[in-house]
Amino acid sequence: MQIFRDISSLQLSLNELRLERKTVGLVPTMGALHDGHAALLKASLAENDVTVCSIFVNPTQFNNDDDLKNYPRTFDLDTEFLKSFDCDIVFNPSVEEMYPKNPLLKFNFGGLEQSMEGSHRPGHFNGVAIVVSKLFNIVNPDRAYFGQKDLQQYKIISQLVKDLSYNIELRQIPIKRDDSGLAMSSRNKRLSAGGLKSAAKLNQTLEEAKKSIVDHKDFDKVRTELINNLEIEGISVEYLEYVNADSLESVKNNSPNNSVAVCIAATVDGVRLIDNIIF
Ligand code: PAF
Image 1 (cartoon, helix red, strand yellow):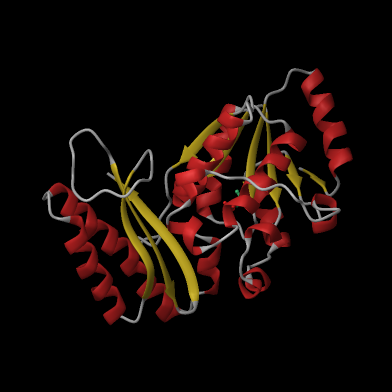
Image 2: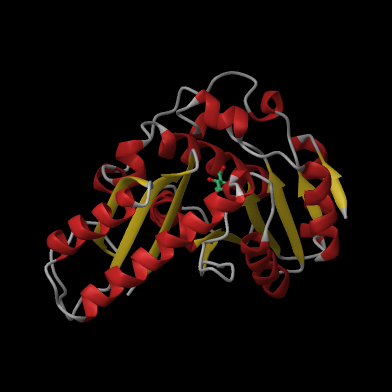
């Protein structure tokens, strides 16, 4: 497994592989790798000749300095993890390598970014779109792999690929959960034993929300009940939204033509977690 810190040596190596007509899969990550990332890696390794995993905690997508400071950084463990999957290349640039100067570019994703993560984390998707475009330009992959847990991020990156005519196939990989149902996330590393137990309630809540879709209940009413139940357990809910799984527009009740996604963001044990279920 090769590790590159600078863009030019990574590109030299990728150019040689391209001359050999090798296909390239990109798995962009911020490190602190877990089984959710393993699913992305496995999908890339199965579909491409070469897999590049980027590890870069991207400062431009954090709207909270403490969140950026506390984001887990476990590079040595991550490289061991990647070696165990036979990942070919790790790209681990410094902040200066990725951003010699602060970027000025501003993206506007319209309605796609006006709810949920977009409205609660101002500037977040601009930072995601900047770093993902840079990674796409640097690596020039045939395929790129993202997790369903970041559903809104996936929609925004799909829009980015369409609007900027990137010739890249995107893959959305289903959420991996631990035995309690908790969606795997790098942030779970910061939860205490009690926090891990509480965090499992997020998935239980999504399952109850799913039942309300099947039972054709009024979403607004169920939503209020579900939020109250979590708040009673000491979980602070930022949002719980029923949305159209394609457009991410808010929906009020079940309709046979649309699949519904229920998305949640909540703070457990001081750690902000997100999850969703598509039905
Ligand atoms: O999903 C993530 O881990 C990040 O948002 C990404 C796509 C690697 C961009 O920094």
